[in-house]
Amino acid sequence: MVTALLAASTGSGIVYVAALFFAAVCSIITYAKIFLFKRIGVTSPITLFFIFIMGVLVGYDYGLFAIVSSIVVTFLLIQKKTLHEFAGSLNREELFNAMQFLAVAFILYPVMPGKKFFGLVNLKSAILIVVLVSLISFLSYVLLKRYGTKRGLSYSGFLGGFVNSEATTGALAGISKKSPEMADPVLIGILLCNTSMLVRNLVVALIVDPSGKTTLLMLPPQIVIILLSGIIVLKRNRRLCAIGKETLEIQSPFSLGPAFKFGTAFTLILIIGNAAYDFAGTIGIYATALGAFVSSSGVIVSVTLLAVNGNISYATAAETAVLASLISTVNKILLSKISGSAELFSLAKNIFGLITLTGAAALLLWSRMGGV
Image (cartoon, rainbow, N blue to C red; front, side, top):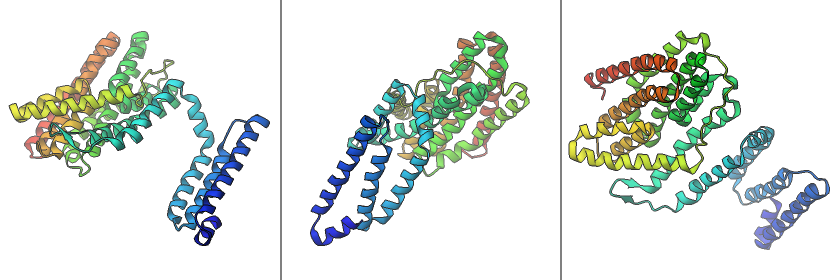
């Protein structure tokens, strides 16, 4: 701070000299710590240089920036042990994926042009949506990576639904194939996975349409499905906390593969949906809900963007979004058949069939009432 104040009378050169001095001191401390004392870690020297920078900001009357930055850094220092443990739990590929993803978020996104392609797709907005949706998935992936099935199949299923409900369902169903007696707790896990997928879809719609119009129109039928799923889970809770020895193998959402797959899916659905609407009207938009067999989030992002851009009504977007959620729910039956045991398929077709029919009835009733 004193350096910055002196710069007012001596010129800005003193700030550069002081910065070089502190950088040299921090480098010497780092060298001594690593090579002389054989201790790995650069937290102290980096923090020392950070304090110098914060002082300069205060001297130049940027006190608010200094205060906020200092609070954030202090929080990170307090959580250092936890962050070290988390970083240690990630493998090399996951760390590499995270760096690729950060490059997309902070390098590719800022340089993308803000104009629309085909009159529909703004690539800059598209990349931002991919980043935000992937962040939701990553937060769940962190918890799943941290605790896994140690907290039970239900816990893993619920978190996995935010990451990728199809991949989670397939992984859980595979457990029932190896151990048929696990069919009931696996079903609970898939139910909770589907429930978190429904919640995620509401959040995704809100991200794309911050006004909340689409989300509010989706809410009643989605709430009916979520509540029915919760009631079924509670009625079958005798095995709710069952523990599985298997680890759910779900690809990191920070991998560029899933991120661009999602981005490509919703962009294609957006283009196809607009063309279908021009050709077949509202029926054509409803047909795009079939894309939920690939990605329900992709469908919801696409139709919500069409509504925001004024291409379709918010009511049509909400109906299609709920249909996509119902199709994704039906998909859990197919995945149970493909990847799971006969016992799991028998349970899944009855329970998810009931949930789908109830959700369809709720959507129809909500439409008749004029909600959408």
